Image 1 (tube, rainbow, N blue to C red):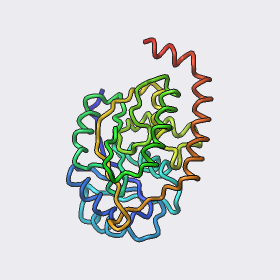
Image 2 (cartoon, rainbow, N blue to C red):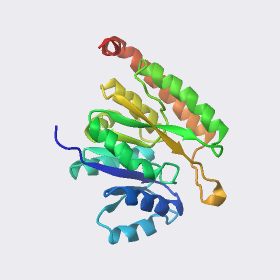
Image 3 (tube, one colour):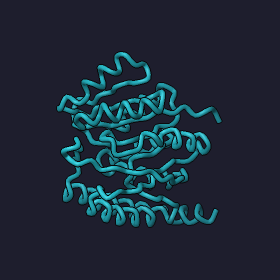
Length: 249
């Protein structure tokens, strides 16, 4: 197997001033950082573009209109594949995820290039309780859908993906383009035989006065997740014999 080539991929939509801070933190930890601007209209991409003009390790891609997190990630993955990268670490643009842990996650991916490295979030007191409780439900469903393959957290966006495997899966479906991207990516990669490796990572939620920006809408996004899990359960049932054989092996 050829030596893995890894980059950091940051999708961003109207993230505000935290975007450039996140990019600088990531760039300090890794030589290749790409940002996918998902139709942002708040000007948050301008400092990043200025930084990229003077930094060959930083690249900015852009979508003309807001298409969703999954669509932005797919856009970046396709470009990364063309550039010869084999793995991508995704992280949120708002600084929630620990840039200091990028090297550790990349080392895990180098050691297990056939696997996906999933962040297992450690929440502080700043985490909204409704978000923490809600992810427990999504995690329960994800482990049902994968027959207990070992997905520690289905929603954490701090992950390293094998690019070829994920792009192949996403190009076969019209789903996984919005907020449903993270859990569905983990489930479908498990179905494809990509094993999860869980690594703990602290997650911080920033208050609005700290520059925190959240596009999470409780009713809209939980409806999207509910519909997604219904589809995945049906998909799991259709694959049940093969999944059982895989668990046996």
